Image 1 (cartoon, chains in turn cyan, green):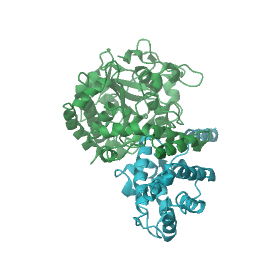
Image 2 (spheres, chains in turn red, blue; image 1 turned 120 degrees about the horizontal axis):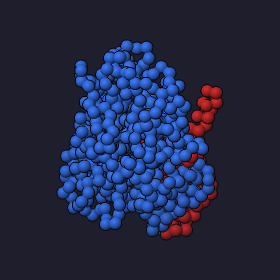
Image 3 (cartoon, one colour; image 1 turned 90 degrees about the vertical axis):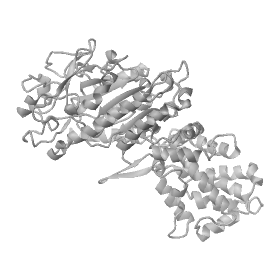
Image 4 (cartoon, one colour; image 1 turned 30 degrees about the vertical axis):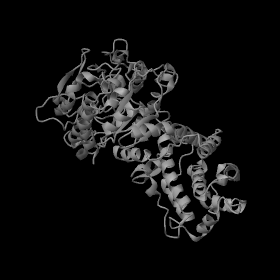
Length: 186
Length: 449
């Protein structure tokens, strides 16, 4: 009987919690960006862009009590969407500004990709291999190809096609990092 | 800075709010502003240290531990305006000035089947021992007739230790971070539609939210969040650098940012060991001081030209369950206490609630009290109080001693929450039942103002 109750309790508890994907969390996003974009041993310090100290804990964080580990504040809401937006908006602007000269400790591979996309709006930047390389550098394999196509077509067909590299790279980065495939667990 | 200091500063801050012209810009004529402030005592607080004390003779008879009273200091009678009373420890003195602002609800059954913290905290918030939908967001639904605030609630204290699936819009915030956030937002454009880029970003989030899978539901929450974000952005930039928890809460209430606030106090009331139990007077002293400061702060802070924050805010003080009288087999002056899901206490006051009442009671009023067969069946060794049978029509305790357990005979947390629901006009379809195939937990009509 006790075993039955335990099973019921576990199932009910899981059912109550597993209703929607949660954020991957601030630390996971920072680590992923660092691994993909920064020089080995360096980090893309997202803390610099969070609007206030402590707010990063609202973007999904692990809580540890003794041997228990629990992921908290991972459900999207208007406050944390706003915090992500402010944080990633500022980070994206740094990427756009890096077209003039790198503002972060980017690794050589990413610098090569960034240099090519920063030729925007020239035709040689608005081609598949350059755009796909920029997409993969930041998004990795988090999103399906269909999402890349949406992103690519937007920048090829909107007014960004003729805007400066600084504006466009900033917008490209924000559009990627605010995508649910980038921020949420699947 | 510790939370207590925030609250203290809140009292000072509350005074300055009175001079602000913006105070009078809200609470438009015709609107019926209503907010909810919940104070949680985490760990199962022993109500005998507040409004359900026992005479010293019961301690002398070895029935109940008592580390709060001085030698020969009997608890005092807390007389309700409804003719009912309870015994109160001297620790509650800071709350005495607000006696008419809240009512005491004693003898409340939590979940009869489980005595764990999580199960009873779940039961308090959701009505189920395994969690589910919390009542907090229900107070902010459009179906109440009020325009929903941007957030269902603020969590301004410790984490809410419960398994709740609708708290995505009950957001942990503190005054310091909100001040910086507000300042930063003033320099950042809101993520509103109307530009090519934001329309694309919002469009992708919206497109990915179509579907019933977990990812789609997460994207739907992001979509809802980004749709609400521009309004919240504007509201947060209006905040005037709240320095305290209380100022943050009242500013958020006044600006339509949040309907509710949950403040879990830092004190830990789970005192199984004797040494921990002996620390209860200090724990309660600290907690009661904070509760009194919140009542004072809400009472002294204007909402608009004619109403105080307390006039527009319902306040609940709650803990997940009660505690046993003692640990069986240990000397009465060297014992801790265990969990007791059969008897809990609440304070409920502010808007929509009649203050100054005492509702319900626990059994074993003294060492000579005769208990029911129900009590003997649920608690054979006599170390737990039970709620006494309750007559909902007359709002009074019944004198009988039931022989068989029927939850309908007792005052339950379902009735407490349903009373809150009634005060917020939450539709009857959401009222909690007493269990499967059992009726709705009766609303405590006599508590409604």
